[in-house]
Image (tube, rainbow, N blue to C red):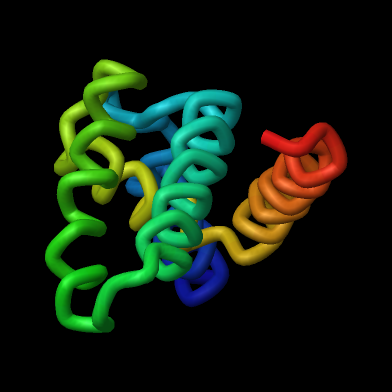
Length: 111
């Protein structure tokens, strides 16, 4: 009986320690999708420019900074939010499905 009580106390203790609250810095899913779409567009732009690979590697951070300025988000906030969402593979798969859909729409529109 003591083992059973100990087991239940241990399980309750473990469950109560879980932190299901989202961090304050966390970007919403919509914000993440918007930023991820723009980052992929910036990567595509940098790689499609008629410059050497080394030059495009130097240009990309400038494009990336413009994405963060456009969305008024610090790069560290984006990185921490991305790390948070990467912990949940299903959620990340949903986000990337939305990113791909958005990129496909932009491609069809010619943007």
